[in-house]
Length: 262
Image (cartoon, rainbow, N blue to C red; front, side, top):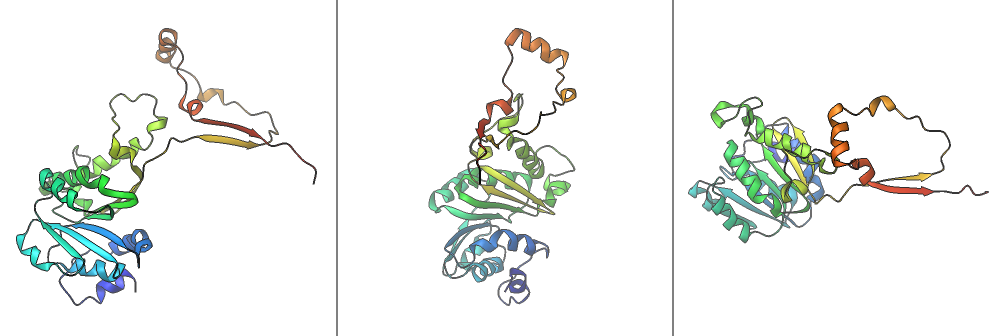
């Protein structure tokens, strides 16, 4: 059964989900079905989603969860561990992190305010194993005033995620003034944006390089109109020396292939 089927046939504890999320789950989570998987869900409400994940992933899954409501502790079942505290409390999250194994998936379906999503991401992201996923749900709250959001408002989770796109291009940015890189940004291998959901794949990015193989056959066309330097760039080169272009720095070389008879 698909996760959508499991949801609509669910008769256990209450679950509340946007329908289009199931396509996103199926796309990114299907690889873990039937395997040993450790998942952390932030925000569990009535506990129905904990039951849903166990049905979807299978008996080898262990679901860890965080909720601020002390009453949620009674929702613990076999292969379920619940921590009570606030996801905006960094000290609490650090304590929980020390009790967790390496995680395959973190799903933030908690309070959805900007500080809650940002503190949780900054504190917990590196707990995800290489190749694992960090998923933030209900990111439409980045546009809602009551959650301290707003269209293109600085400090929202969506704007933070947009800034991480630039950081994916670390090795190609020439002027790094005003941009910082850290362990988190260097372990974001990809970001997928959906309506109300952002999915981060965690993996340390290696230095990129390009190579050429085969035999040269024509005289290349040089698009000189794209390579004009500004007056400021010319002055900088005069006083500081010509800096290597990132394309040159990342050049992995040319491998010539000699033609051989059949």
